[in-house]
Amino acid sequence: MNPVTRRHVLASAVFTATLAAISAPALSASRAALTVEDRVAIAEAVAGIGLYADLREWNRVRSYFAARVTTDYTSLFGGEVATSDRDALIAQWQSLLPGFDATQHVITNIVVEGTENDAIARSHVRATHWIGARFWTVGASYLHRLVRTSEGWRVRAIAIHRLYEEGDRAVLVTAADRVNARRE
Image 1 (cartoon, rainbow, N blue to C red):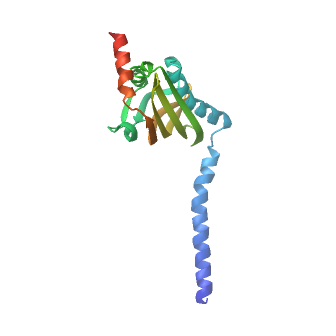
Image 2 (cartoon, rainbow, N blue to C red; image 1 turned 90 degrees about the vertical axis):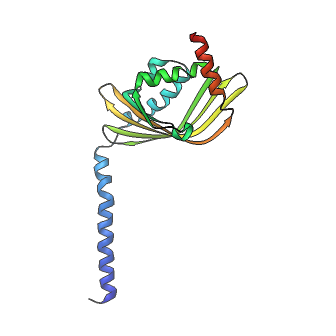
Image 3 (cartoon, helix red, strand yellow; image 1 turned 180 degrees about the vertical axis):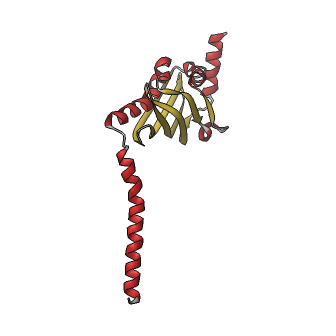
């Protein structure tokens, strides 16, 4: 076999092996692909958490979470990734969000991928928090990890990656102070 033919055969073998390696995961993933109903339920959980937190409907927020939830807000606030039970997470949100006159979490471009029992949803969020004319807005990307439970799809982890901020971040302190004053 001449050198040119040998290189062609070798290149064809490498191409065929690479194609097989790339295709194998795709085929196994397609066998366990999420249904349209799964994708809708997952997108609803991601959007529902933001919507119902804004409406202060805490039982509905709770219904979208797994029993334990990991949150990664390090790109926004520093600190460490935290894991807590869903009630502790909601209590943390309740100690801040009601202190605003209004909040709005606009969650868009939700893309879902996963298998039968585990999924990831990526999205954009623009979250604005108002007290009077003061506001703080954060634009970010979200990564939600979900698991299928006997009750349906539940969020087990949320990570936010800050893209930009607008307004006055100090409005967060004012909101927390307002909630604490109501409790006293």
